[in-house]
Image (cartoon, rainbow, N blue to C red; front, side):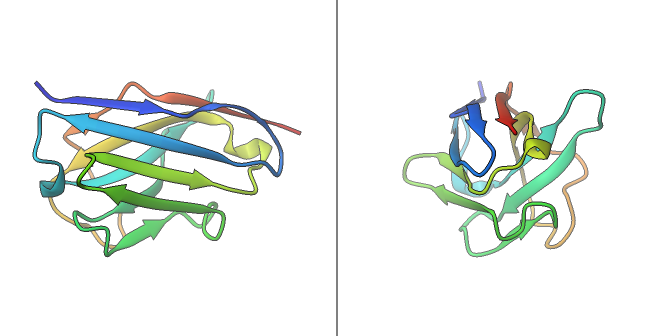
Length: 124
């Protein structure tokens, strides 16, 4: 049984930082590309960042480029998202996802596994 669990969300002031973690079990972690997605109230879910199986390739939404950094530790089956210089518009539920294959500069159409999400709130 595959489980994907996010953690690290919380309330932070604008300009602050948070580090999200996502641990996956029940799968061969380094067989999968991974990514972070987010959904704000009343808005559609959007891609934030993706990373290939080895960590050698990454992709970011323009809105977070230069502020967020995605990384992974395959030995720990864990994905990370370091979020710096947070803005109120970053407020959303953040989800971790896993899929097979690498889409380069495009978002994966149908990630196979999703976590339940972790809430990030940024106050102004």
